[in-house]
Amino acid sequence: MLNLTRIHLISHLKVLKEKAQEAKDFLRKEGYLNSDFLPINEGKFILWPLNQDTIPFEGSIVKCKGVGHVKQSRDYRLNLADNISSLAPRSFDIFGKIAILRLIDDLKDHEKEIAEALLLSHKNIKTVCADSGVHGEFRIRNLRIISGKNNFVSVHKENGMRFEADISKVYFSPRLATERERLSSLANEGELVLDAFAGVAPFSISLAKKGSKVLSLDSNPDAEIWALKNFVNNGVSDKQYSYHNSKFEKFDFGLKKFDRIIMNNPTNSLPFLNKAMDLLAEKGMIHMYMISPKDNSFDISNHLNLGYNCKSKKEVHAYSPSSSLFVFDIRRDSV
Image 1 (cartoon, rainbow, N blue to C red):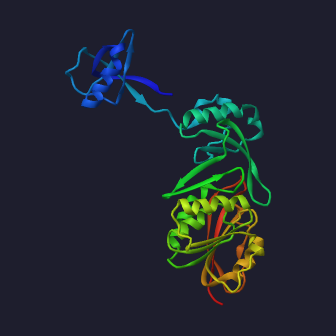
Image 2 (image 1 turned 60 degrees about the vertical axis):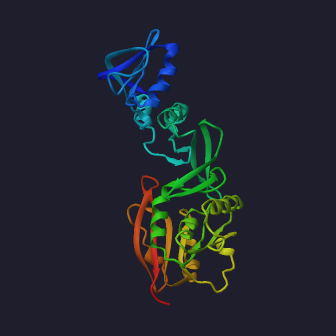
């Protein structure tokens, strides 16, 4: 919805309503319509805002205060009552045209109001979901549609790529876009990369498009369906990737060693770190994503084999009041 405010005097073409569309078409075609202002409805007449004082069209030219566009704030909480706004989440995930909210119990009775306020302030959003957390072996969000279209399928765009998925059946985190860009900037052409928990393949595609050869694994059969579609839609040659519906710990790697290993399994990466270290080539890098305490009480060095060093630890985003998602960049310095 637009808020309206009267501003300085400008010229308008005043025409009868039955002539309004004809006048508008003419003004647009000839470049006389002032698009910075809105038309004014005045009884039997419409006043079209002009960018000059005289025009060759039947009607009268009048000067009056223009009506300008004032864009509504994208902070959806401004559309809510104070007692609800103060508790509503400031941030939320967006996957294409789907907004994903995590709501505290005190807001359950107001979730419809919150969802409709979000739809009002974000015209690109068509569906609002409540997220009650990740569950199961496949790390799928427990989602419930609160308002909008009854649809969990959308297309997420980032860094010139498109990732399509049904987010009720697969894992995807829009918040890792910066990380995907970072890793693709680190990768070298011809690197052999293992994406151990690939999901719908956003990391795999990001690195494959930089020239890496990627082996992608995920045990969720729905993830494989969407991943293969995303490889094709992003123009990745099938020579650049190999995707397998398999658990990381069950896959037969033979004698392969990898230059880079991505472990995006935030709630359960650590148990697989030993196997990842065994698969890493000398001077190679593991990027392990893990939920960890904010107080730095967790020490990754206690879990590294001889010859492996954590080169950096970075907070990606907050997860709870006491914990965050961190990425540990682990390098193999010697055999």
